[in-house]
Image (cartoon, rainbow, N blue to C red; front, side):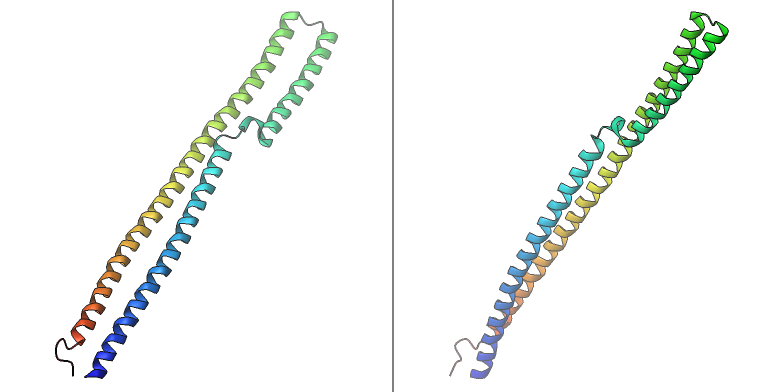
Length: 173
């Protein structure tokens, strides 16, 4: 009888120690998860700000496109001046040709602005998707923590109940 009481008490003590250790391990794991989640959110936010609010017109691609148009317009202007000197073109013709060049530059700038707008829309969609994924992961973790907490409390109560049932209340020798 004494042996069963000792075994019951040892079982209860081991269950209690195991539960306490599990609780501390779960807290440590939860802190690490929160830290990783916060780092992921900060990283996503930095990526979004860097890409969404970046100066697209100052990007290497936009500068290269504008430089190509500028060189083309410069070469065409030089050709037009030479053509005008040889053929004696009227000032109106030169103005019309210059207007065409300015329109081409405007078209390139408009195209780059449209690409910037499309790029921002794409970046915003990616950001929304990433934030939704982070929220879903966090929600799933919270559900798992809730289930784990319920299971741990049930197991703790079961151990306590078993330990109490194992003791011969009032029948000790």
